[in-house]
Length: 267
Image 1 (cartoon, one colour):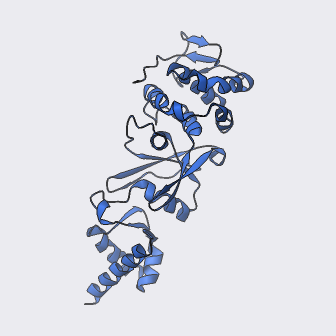
Image 2: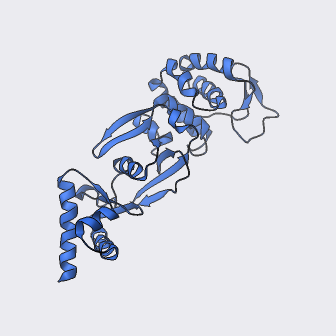
Image 3: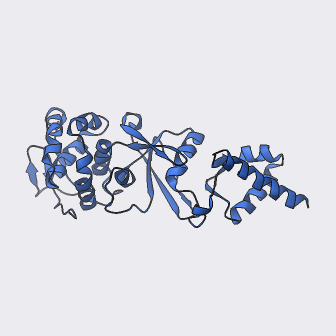
């Protein structure tokens, strides 16, 4: 009887949170609300998880699952990442292919929700939801915008910052050809006059590569301001494909770039 009463109290607790418009909580809050020991609270929450009523994206952090997301086994990442990052006291923004999707470049749905953080953070799996965290230097300087979700406000890199990150993190974005494909869709959202300011938060080599790729995908007008930026800031040539040999590559003088890879976007 005592165990059954505890389960009922736990269900009432999460029902009350959901009724108040809150869909997340931490273990210490649940323990205090239920008035039980840490082990008893953990047992009650484990039962709720087995019933598909809650999920645990990160240790000690729980989300309440409305019926439409129980088959997913978790809330969609954009609906709990803001709360999780706030609870952990972490700076972040959503980037790369995930951010590109929000900006209309939806050629290929990323397998994982991609998030940049200021220091190492372990990736997580919650039901069918995967979140990958990547460290971004000078994260606080990256230009972001705020998008509303059903459970809060999500920080997302601007189209310009997203474009630069794509060329800076080519491997995590699916490779050079995938980056070019995404840029071909993202180009119409880019503001040419905003690219130099976005470039200030990244290595200048990223601007060199981005300018060249924008020309290759048929958006040279988006690269005009960036070319002036590169002319002023680039002290040396860099390779289009980092880590690959460029001994026999052609050199693009405008972008001070060794073109050591053939670009084939899926236009």
